[in-house]
Length: 395
Image (cartoon, rainbow, N blue to C red; front, side):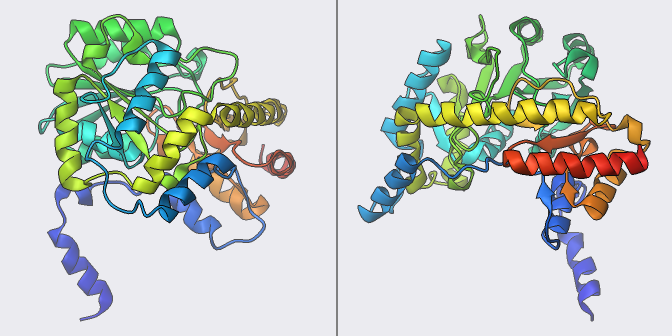
């Protein structure tokens, strides 16, 4: 029997949930990029900065000191204390480091823990989109049903509270928010979030709030959802170190929730993971206690790039609303007269610039592409020149 037949026969053992998952729209383009030379990538959602030196040194010290065993399931207590103090100082929301926080393997694990802990099979999760590509898949893997509610560029891609209200059914269990937003760069206002808070309270829903980009905002306030009146008791707050501190490869994040909820997450975490990497936790402790100047420096540089790419895209005839958070621009490609996947494939083939089609991020993303400005200023300048040639040919 040949390999193709073996693969086909073996695939019958997969669960319907897994077999039915769509491949990541991001991964497809990076697989192509990996085979090409001289590509400028505006696709990857990863800081181009190396982890700050004091954080690197903390990780090295940890290894040299022989700290290579497990930590407690919930994570190093000093790190939990530091994260809780950080959240209280910035947003006025208080968590008990002993019972209301778990340190996770990035926010990705935190999403898995939260959804697995709270969803019964068939429960619905309302998700404003465009959103991070994993949200819908994680809901499905946890046995839930993702219900997408598209945001509109006319509203600066803020969540549509009226549409969220209309999407709620007796099966709805969760509203899943991701702001500052990947892929649009939108930052949800306090007024909009208060409307969503009222909806959650009226329908007795859990709010899952992914705030991984909380420190990367430009000229606006980030509103921490559980700090809103009455929301702490029904919110699972997700955060981490990957984006703000340029620690993507360290894989360390956290989830905070009232003790009754957090116990469920911790129960899954202790069986599936045991504990987040010890070296990464010790480095994260230095990041959150000593890394403020590095966060500010990186944020200022992202802002400088933001002020280059947004006007640059607008001048190319790719209307781009002004992103206020994260490190993404989300321009319209309507003038090119093609869908996002075709646009992205041709741009990569003809001009060697990698972007990600907006459709990869769910309903509301079609007709746009994601351009990350987590790449060098000079690279963005060159990418804009290449895109100008492309638009002249196809626009």
